[in-house]
Length: 111
Ligand code: 5GP
Ligand code: ZN
Figure 1 (spheres, rainbow, N blue to C red):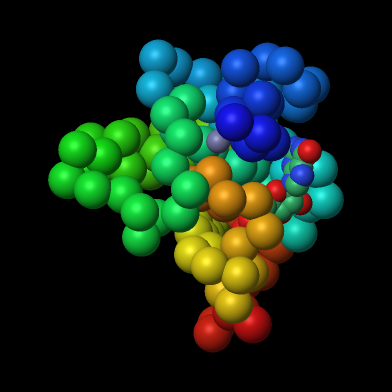
Figure 2 (figure 1 turned 45 degrees about the vertical axis):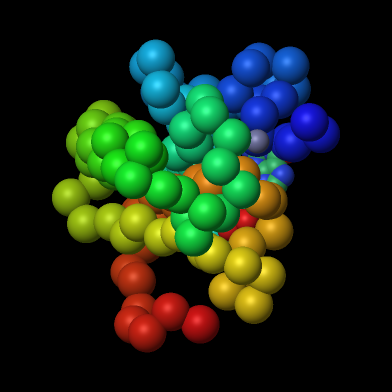
């Protein structure tokens, strides 16, 4: 399968990795939208969050727990976690990923 984040998770494409465990890999966004912008991805390919099933419940939880650990390691007290689902919501890479954004004030609602 020709998937950018599968290749990054497998180490076939370089990235600035900040965290990994048996289920999850996290690396810095190539085009950061905040001083800290990390993408947390499952090693398993799931194209978008709406394609996840009951069998992915633990995996989705792990993405969030990993993001919390990374935020702590980055010294972030306040931060935002975002999953874009579908092109209309800004998803451009169709392998589920959780954005961890921090290091600047966050406005609401997001654009
Ligand atoms: P999306 O728009 O799908 O929610 O988020 C995809 C993110 O992946 C974007 O923020 C984009 O900057 C990032 N991205 C795209 N290609 C690469 C890449 O090759 N390496 C890294 N580290 N990030 C990438
Ligand atoms: Zn993939």
